[in-house]
Image: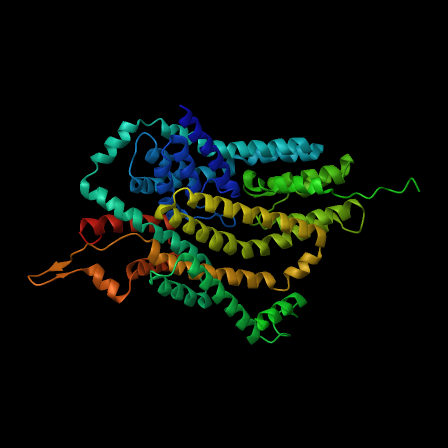
Length: 265
Length: 274
C-alpha cells in the first residue's frame, strides 16, 4: 500500500517538473530510481531509468514547442518494470514511447485549459490582490502535478497479471525484436540533440569525437577534457583571425584580458 | 528633514524570496501569454516591498502579467535587472514602466537562444548520459545521484549568481551582453556538445549484428567483426546521420521513433540484428 502512495507522490513531483524543468524529477534516471525505491526494487528501477534516460535525453521544451513528456513515461514504465508486473527493462523502454505521447497531449491540453485560471490572475491584479495571484499560481502547480498523477493512478489499476500475460503472449520473435529496438531507439534522441546544435562549422567536432570514442581506452571524462580543450583552442584561434576593431563594435576589456591570459598559457 | 521620503530598497530576504519563487516560473505556462503569470508570481515579493500604495501595486502587477517567455534559467538574469529597474521606478529615478517592459522584451528573446544549447543541448545530455553509464556499469545509485546533485548545484548557483549580478549591475548588463561574450560561450558549449555527442553515438547504441552471416566449410564470416575492422560503430553513425537529415527535412521525431522501432523488429526477424 505504501508503495502505491510512494509512486503517486513521485508521479506528482514528476508532473510538476515535466513543465517547470527545474529539479529534474521527471528525467527517467531520477523518476525511475524513485519509483524503484518506492516499490522496493531499486536495482530494476535504476536499470530502467538509465536505459530510458538515453532514449529521452534529447526531448526538450524549447520556445513554445512541447516535446514528448518523459514524466508520465518514466513513472508508469517504472511501475510496470519494478512493480508487481516485473516486465523486463526493454519492454519498459518500448512502452514508455506511447506513454510519452499521452503525456505530451496532456501537457498541450493543460496549456489551453489553464487559460481561465490565468484570467483569474488578471482579476486579482486589477484588485491589487497579490496574495490571490500567488494562490492562482500555486493551484496551477497542483494542476501540473495532477496532470501526471491521475493518469498514473489509472494505469496502476491495470492488473499486473494482464500485463505479464500480455507480454508473454507476444511471439518469441517479436520479443527479441523489442529488445533490439529498445537498444536502437537512442539514436533518435542523439539526432535531436545534434540537429539542435549542428552548424557547418561544428560538424568536424562531431566526427573527431566519434573517431576518438571508438578507441575503448578513453573514458568519458577523458573525452570531455579533449572536447573542452578543442573548444578553447577553436575560440581562441577564431578571435585571433578577426581583427579587434572589426565585426560588431569594439570588444570589452574583459575579453582582451581573457585573450591575454590564454596567450600566456 | 523628517519629511524626506524614505528610500525604497529590496532587502536581501526579498531577493531570496524572489529567488525561491523563480523555480516555479513555468507552472502556469499557457497560450497565448506563455510564462506571464509565472513571471508576475516571482515578482510578487518585490512588488509587495516597493509599492505599498494600491494604485502603483495594481500597475506593477499588471505590468508583469504581460506576455513573457524565455529559457527558465536565464530568466534569473532578466529578473535581477528588472528588480533593479523596479527599485529605480519606485523611487522615481527616471525609469518609466515602458522602460521596464522594453527591457524584458529585448532580453527574453536573445537570452533564450543563447541558453537553450548550453543547458538542454549540452549539459543535460552529457551529464545524464554520464550518469546513465555509471548506473549501467555497476555503480547503481551513484549514477542518479551524480545527475541530480550535479544538475541542481549548477542550476541553483547559476540562478542565484545571475539574479544577484543583474540586480547589482542593472542596465550595465545589457551593454555587457551586446559585447558578444555570451555568443562565444554558446559556441564553446556547442563544440563540447557536438564532440561528446559524437563520442556517445558509438558507445551507447546497444546492438549487434548477428554473429554469423555466411558460413562455408572453411570459415564463418561475421558481419560484425568485418564492420569492426572497418570502423566500429559505423552502423549507429549512419543511422544517426540519417535521423539528423530527416529532422532537417521536418520529419517529426515520432515518425523517426516508429521507423527505428520497425527497423529493430525487422532486423531481428530477418536475423541480421542480434
